[in-house]
Image 1 (cartoon, rainbow, N blue to C red):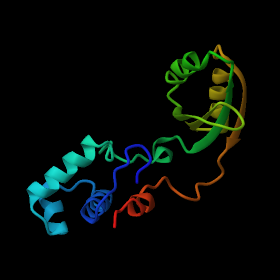
Image 2 (cartoon, rainbow, N blue to C red; image 1 turned 135 degrees about the horizontal axis):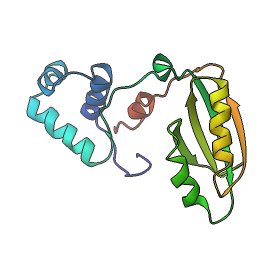
Image 3 (tube, rainbow, N blue to C red; image 1 turned 60 degrees about the horizontal axis):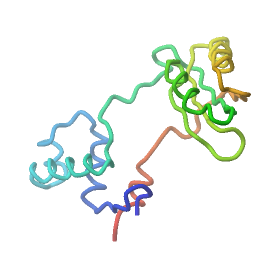
Image 4 (cartoon, helix red, strand yellow; image 1 turned 90 degrees about the vertical axis):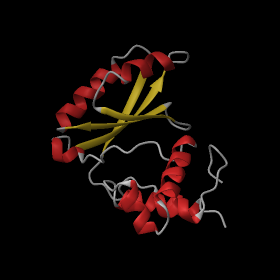
Amino acid sequence: MTAQTGHRLDDLDVRLIRDLATHPRSGILETARRLGVARNTVYARLARLQDRGVIVGFGPDVDLGAIGYGVMAFTTIEVIQGRFNEVVAELVKIPEVIEAHTVAGEGDMLCRIAAASNAQIMSVVERIVHIPGVDRTRTAISLAEQIRYRTMPLVERARSG
């Protein structure tokens, strides 16, 4: 079962998601032909997967390095108790903060930062440190991406049957 909704994916759901990942610019008719099903079936399945929150977007997958943001860092933030929402509201204003998660363990939040240089990472971290409610940060700069963000192995695992 999927963690949030309890929904399972059947074989056609998995094949549809895999096809969309492989051919993101294809239309419904092309996808239906590749999958060997009616276009109305593809349309209905796609709508159902979106309604269930399984498919959440169709935007382009942008390589940030190709547009000048080739340095990646991960910053752990310790937040003063009761100030979490304030900190999040300020983090959203920093374009280089491309992801933020509440975490258990060391720190309260983990942010992924993209920048053009180590100096820009330092500047972003300085900005974060000065957000009211931030107590302390720890930053690790990524040297190389070993596994690109991926979802298909878990989509395959969520297949029912």
